[in-house]
Image (cartoon, rainbow, N blue to C red):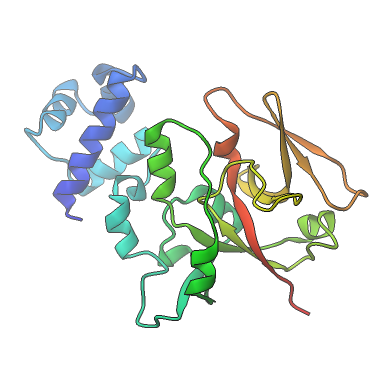
Amino acid sequence: MSFVALQDHMRKIIRKRIEAGEFTGMELARRSKFTQAHISNFLNAKRGLKLSALDRMLKCLGLSLYDLLDPHEAARHAAAPVGADEDYADVPLVEGAIAAGNEVIVNEVVSELLKFRRPFLKRITPDLAAAPPDQITKRKEWTRFVLIKVDQKDGMSMWPRLLPGSTLLLDRHYNSLRPYRKNDRNMYAVRKSGGCTVKYVELEGNLLVLRPHNQDYNIELLPVEEGQTFSDLLVGRVAHISIEP
């Protein structure tokens, strides 16, 4: 993606936010410390932004450079490109906060790449929760499979199904609450406190009920904030568990 294309995407984002009433051009100028004429000329493609000015605008809007990338373009440089090995695919191992917050997983955030048989991954069925079409499309553009390690607390709260240090394969294209298998509870990675936790999940009103497997641990209640849906909080279904001896 070219620098010009990045700026064009920035224009679209700003126009969309102005149309949604998040701010006016004057407010954006005040926040970014550009003149209103500068903002107007940029939005009308009469001038571009220097690299330092683009950085300032990203910070003002609460965006990162990844937010300006076309997901398909970003996927070309992602951590798990289609390799020459037809039998195995590389799946990225990342921190829980990355799994919860990064739509496209790029090499810079990957701890390790682990191989999974492609036929196994193809057999895993996705299930996206009902949502407006643009939200469903956006989730489909996420890197689908990622791996995380279970920490001490989550491992013991889900014992004996999990142990601390277990490696979990997450299907981030599964954010519905429908059972994957009849008479079996799905286990999910759930966004929480800037990272993620692993639990069974139920919905009660505007609360996600996070249930441990180990009854020595407490049930947690996670509010669904205004403007969110429960599916926004679900990072993905645990599709495979690897417990090292």
